[in-house]
Amino acid sequence: MDTPSIHTIDYITIVVYLLLMMGVGWAFKNFNKGISDYFKGGSRGTWWLVGMSMFMGTFSAWTFTGAAGVAYQAGWSASIIFLSTATGYLLNFICTGPWFRQIRVTTGPEVLRMRYGNGTQQYYAWISIVTGLLYAGLHLYGLSIFCSAVFGLPVEGVIIVIGIAVLFYATTGGSWAVMATDFLQSLILLPITILVAWLAYRAIGGFGELQAAVVAQGLSEDFKIVNSPGEFAAGAFTWGWVAAMFTKNVIAWNTLGSATRFFALKDGRDARKASLLCVVLMLMGAGIWFLPPMVARLLYSDQIEAIELGKSAEAAYAIVSMNLLPPGLMGLVVVAMFTATMSSMDTGLNRNAAIIVKDVYPAFCRLLSKTPRSDEELLKASRIVSLLLGIGIILLSLYYSKRAGAGVFEIMLSIGAYLSLPLSVPTLLGLFFKRVPGWAAVFSSLSAFCASVYLGISPQWGAPKVDFQVTVLIVLTVGTIAFFVSGFWWPKVSDAYRERVNAFFKNMYTPVDFEKEVGDANDSHQLRLIGKIAVIVAALVLLLIPFPETWADKVEVLFVSGFLFLVGGLMWLSGVRADRAKSKSL
Image (cartoon, rainbow, N blue to C red; front, side):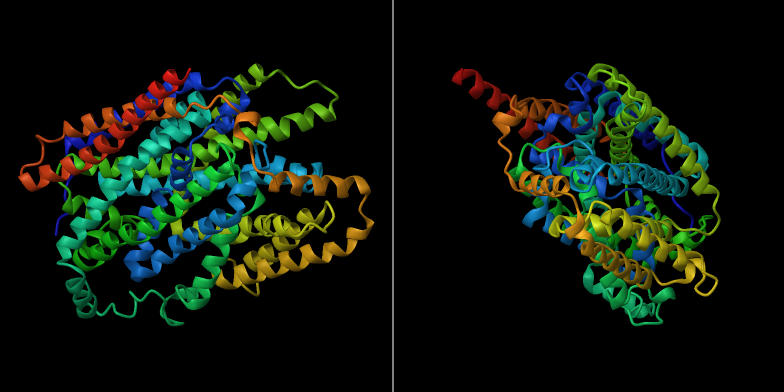
């Protein structure tokens, strides 16, 4: 069976979209009056705007390449990835989300300075830059795999073009542009992925026929949610793997380092709403994102196995979309992949620039006894730093593309288990246990790093051959023991340190009074501007109507356009009404 080809209108759709996102970055340029606006939206972001940005920043095109490859291989086991993330957001909703907003700073390392001290701040600042670049480069690489499968384009060219587009709007508009584009991108991602899931469901004939096809092709064991040991390599998708995945993801979304996701929100109440929105969207995504690659395994496996990639299964989502969507809408699927990757890249880009400007630079000034530059000068420097970091992400992604045999999903798990988890353990425990010295986080993470290095390079174990779940268990255990061992030194800490720790917890538990602490809300402005742009995008999607040949295909275009018109129109109208109500009250 020949792989379907891409149409000219799909290329045009992608180019117009990239230009539009650059325009959004320019439109939000005037929202930035200083460093606080550039890096955290001045803490004036509405729950729906920041919540959607958090949701989009959680995943990237690796969801539709690496994770889709897992669904192609192991069926519903892939949903565990997002069910565990939803559980992490649920803990944000219950308690940690409001705490994070109430810390009242700009970057993750600033939080660690308040909790542990300057040394821990600098340690985490430098390592966070490295891990942030590694993840962002991987997200961009995942997108290049998807586009390579769809267009047959060289991976390197895709990396450079998309990387430059993200650089433009992220460095121009800062945090406001990141949040706005994330929201708009989600409005494209949701309807198009719902549509692909529906078309896949219809193509297979419903869940009854899906199950019958699974049985007929001998995939009943492979497609279980939880598999038996020995079914897959390295004990993947077993109960132990599930436990490790839940542990890693719940910890990852509830550490002091992850608090930055909540800094742009107005107060703790909005933090809860944003977290709950992420829970709902993640639960929905766990179902609709992984049905298409499962159907691809049953209907289009010959096409997928013919793809020349390191892991052809990672092209499953692209191939099923190309088979089922009419001309024009395939371009929107690629756009949806762009949106997922861009949201992860631009968020990491903005955060890394914030760390350099707000954490690393002031430390150098103190070391050299120099006065830090003005807020206006730092705003200009922030854009330069973002530009340099973006170039680094592009180069790192190009490096990933040259590595033979390494799948996106496997690289993602390795970074999470070997690098991120050692950093996360003490920054989660530090939220709940205060009686540890200032060096506790560094000692705990370095101990866990030693364990991960041993597991990764020891001749007895073998680098990639240690099971993911074994790595998570050992790293978590070593980091936790080291953290609590450091607690024996609590009686010896200074009174000044005790006072700082008590002040940190008191601040974290004190609700934000938005009117007194921030003020000058611009909710209606956010509604009007983003709603207006969404309506423009809906009108552009409507221009695709002439290209599908059948009325059924035209209805699919109308569905996507109508979704954007409905949401964007309601937002625009709500913003106008809010402005009118405000003007009458004055």
